[in-house]
Length: 263
Image 1 (cartoon, one colour):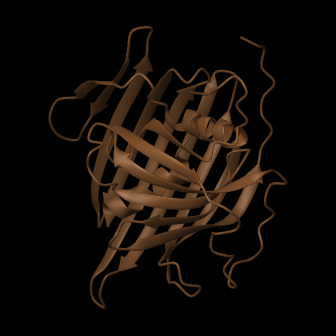
Image 2 (tube, helix red, strand yellow; image 1 turned 60 degrees about the vertical axis):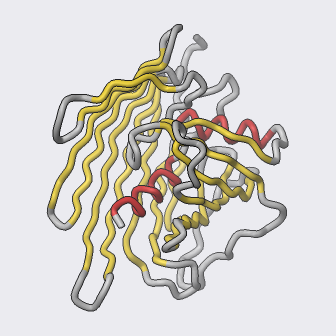
């Protein structure tokens, strides 16, 4: 279950910042539910807070869930991510704290791209830091959404992307993206209050997530979502093969981007 919730976070936050990047700072809160039915039980919340200055991006993500597996067995889980990514998309520093039924684990990491390679270093609660080289096309979290939007704008119906993940596997995901035809996503839930969505173009997409270093394996999970051209996501559905978790936008605050000198 801990990995399931982290999968959802990876989906909410999947995001090199390109020359025409349109990602916009915002704060979004999501309701998490177990299942995709209209009356699916609510199991928690996820909040994504994305700010920007002229140096780069600051991403804070906070998730809190309580899942009742049986009448007497409940699982409480929280996950917090605090990350900073350079405007160029060439460096990332992050801290992840996950608490499951009172047991805390903390991870710290950094990713740096140079002319020769892109290298990651991750510090775990136990053992020495892990150091490894990532595939050259790997995108950092904020950068990946810009890449996704640019490809959708270019009418690419299907395409792959490599993204570094700081919460689920601490490595590279291969994401295969397919634009869905028409309105194939589930509708809004009757119990939810209407949210003022961005007046921007959006696309329904379906994505599968596979370990980037073990691409012969089956995908770990799949995600469908509505993605807006300013980076906001809604109507997320995460399918692991064993269980389905959904995330619906409950509140949204768009923020102005800073005015920065051109580099």
